[in-house]
Amino acid sequence: MISSLRKNFLKFPITLALALMLSSSLLVGCGKEQKQTINSSFSDGLKLGALLPVTGDLSSIGQNMPEAVKLAIDEINACGGVNDEPVTLITEDTQTDPTAGVSAMTKLAEVNKVAGVVGAFTSSVSSAAVTIAVKNNVMLVSPGSTSPVFTEQAKNGDFQGYWARTAPSDTYQARALAALANKKGFNTIGTVVINNDYGVGFEQEFISAFKRQGGKMTGKRRPIRYDPKSAVLDSEAAAAFANQPDAVATALYPETGSVLLQAAYKQGLTEGVIVLLTDGVYSEDFIKQVGQTTNGISILAGALGTVPGADGEALEAFTTKWKDKTGNKLTAFIPHSWDATILLMLAAEAADANTGEGIQSKIREVANAPGIEVTDPCEAMELIRSGKDINYQGASGNVDIDGNGDVVGIYNVWTVREDGTTEIIDKISPTDATED
View 1 (tube, one colour):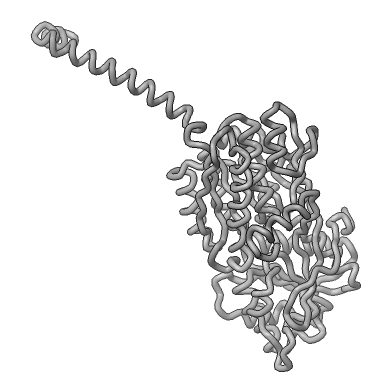
View 2 (spheres, helix red, strand yellow):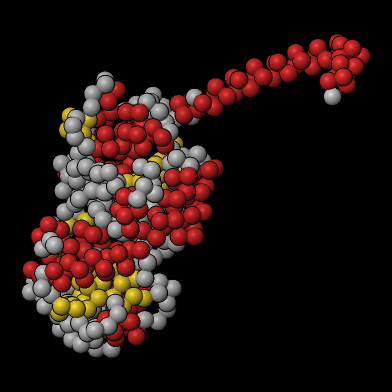
């Protein structure tokens, strides 16, 4: 081979010299291109994704979430952006479906090259999406995936710090609902849940917490779990409401959950039984889907539910901003979506890098003590730019994120009026439940 090259060099010295010069030029060019690629996190500005359910079973709750993400980005861009560049948002619809969510997350991570994503909302979608996020060093912050499964996976090191959420785990909501049931004097309770990470995780923790408080589950049966793809749920409804419980605790999605509760009503099983609901169906659209009695009264009148509340120092200012900018009612998980987005941007600024690695390294630092407590996002940005440590206080809560990516929140207690509207009537804490 060397001999052959020598011959070619002697035969074509000018040609080879020109080729070497061209090669050298290309290498220099490649070096410039490589440098530009390395610094592209600044030249392109911070890219964030929204991975939320605009359509599908949870669209009644999720359709306003991308608007909250956009509002947060507009707020920061109006006061200088992140690392001196405007932030770009790419929004994807999960369709409340893990398959669609995986496709959307793959696009955000591998095609759009985002550094962080607000989402997903559905726990089953987040379970699928977080693997892609970790593989691509993308920081995923969910405003509503509440399954306890994520805590265990984080403890095992599965997420490498690329996972957090601004809504508390269902470990806490289940305890809060159990505390509510105990407070209302319910002695026997049935359960029925959607058969996915969200439903099963909630069910297990609720049963455990309610039993610790001296409550009993109806019958000696297996827990009732329904297939999210089922069109008919008569047998599941009958099993859940059997043996005349004081209440039936549920963890449902709106479209399928409404079918189940309609079936229970049509079988005459709901009279005298209080339905306990959760965040997954906290929507007046869901109440309408379940329907009315022959007297025009909501089938769910008197039902009680819990939903992650917002009690942050920034809530009042954010509520005013939301109504002024969108004209919409402030619904569940909107403050959590806002806070998730703000945290991603503050972390990127603190890291001085528009990358997932940078955000991952700083997100807990900007969310937690020590640091100057600050509620206004632009003020927080200015403090970071001046080299100060901050402790962001959000609209949803203090957003103190622990080592597993979890926050502990407060829960609103809501009820359904006879006309089908909902009303917040109380607050309850998971610590109100009896501990082991």
